[in-house]
Image (cartoon, rainbow, N blue to C red):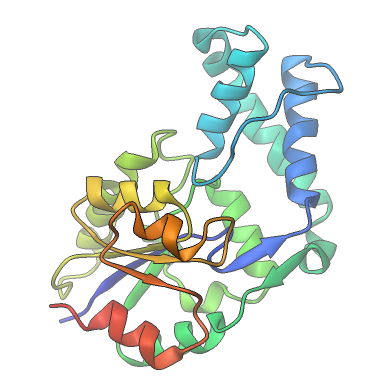
Length: 231
């Protein structure tokens, strides 16, 4: 029997230099006719759709109007990223221990996919840029394009995985770097592992009561024990 492992991307597997975020804002300006100076919110652990809706609310654009144009925003954001896909690797940095952890979990039979606020095409571009696609079954992942409410994503991934794999056992495991990753995992009755490789420290993450907090993914044995150790 195999464990379903749901990985966050940003702050967990990799960090960016702001290029992707700038293209996100450019798409917002173009689609919603926003000013050059867009009001900023906390992005940590939110889906792309949630970020759009919260940002537009600050610019007095009602939710109904925002949702009507959301497909066009998604399309434009994807187009802007596609245009820089050939150089995206230069704008992303793989975090320590990621590849050894993914390799070892694959060797142990874990079924690895994504649970991320990124839109599915954006998530795939980021993985491809750092040659990480090989470790994931992306078809069973849960993305910001599945629902803009992150707390609904674990059940989505579980349904997709159950339809494809008959040998999944135990709780799924959510691995992320923000309190919202922890809340998402708890909402989906998943085991939650928080890693302090984003903007939140160990103590800040521990205050949200995940099942475990790791400083980073550098200790491969510790990561594997954390993911596979609980039945």
